[in-house]
Length: 356
Length: 115
Image 1 (tube, rainbow over the protein chains, first blue to last red):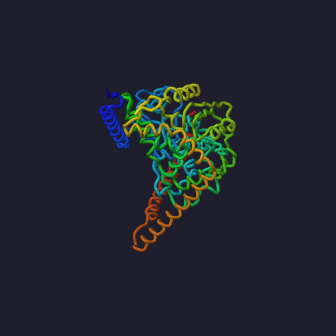
Image 2 (tube, one colour):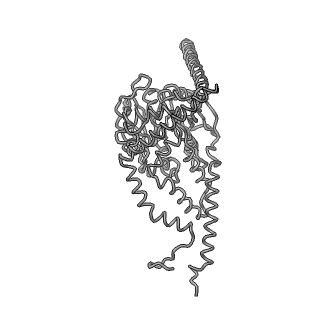
């Protein structure tokens, strides 16, 4: 008698089912660039060059006094904090009664080659913050920065201590003395940053993206598709959620050469911010000048901004009110992953409620 | 054919690929990450990048020289125009900031007088 488990019919059926799944997989990947993202309604409040400041619409007036000013990283699309309904930090903050502003840096072109971090901190951020304060009719803001956006927010807050009522930092590297693999890859004498900035007025987004993928080379490439393969077998799997995230991961943003050079040399190689030697437009950036309440959020499995880089802020600032939250997950996962709505968002929400 | 542990090897090629990945992923990842964590890897990748950038720069320079020779605007020429617009916008912003500061200074005495 033929064993049913090894019968030719059973094998043919398995191949057929798998082939269907493979077609679904190709469809999911091909449809990702069209995935709907950043759907929460918003209005343009201010603009300068490519940068845009948006204010998210509320059905009812805000119940919290202090507006939130979100400062996003330069190398990622801003919709990560408003990925899709149900997976949106912005949506959560609106639900908690906050007035939410988001600063999107936009996509730089060759004409922006002279725009370095100093320009962003002294000419863009102060004006965007003023526009947010005017629109909200509030003297102070809760400045919330994510990754490099957190570094910009930190420098801005240190130089303009009257603007921030609170500072919230999500996976923000401050001390680069032990910056992990990124630190080794960008070390002086190893990484040709001058040649890079000289060759590219705007560094293609692919380059920092390759650096990130090298942190976990197999999982961030083949692993992505292997996981998709498994999840497609689950009838409850939400393909559109996967597509939104896949779209974000693959839509990298170019980094202006001058800003990139400053980022690598002054932060990674010289570690000027933590050492207190950073100067922006001739003004020293002293972390001790940050006297507002600060919430610093780190991720347990963050290889982009490891804990060795993020935890220094709490000992270097001048504020007495300083808290640190350690959230289970990776650099992006804690902000928008499946557990974000149960873990990170309520923790930040509770802290904001206590510091409104 | 049944394996010694009693399981049946898959005949579905997709499942074979998945099983190979599952069986080796941890070991391969660990090996790759170990290599990439070495300073020697960072050094080599830096050299590779430098070589690529030299080639890229040479292509860009040649293209610029060619376009200049045939009297066509180069990428830099067009970027320079955009840069001028960005500079003008900054000037307008600076004027706007000054006007706002003057406006505030003018309002302040009026408000103080009303008190």
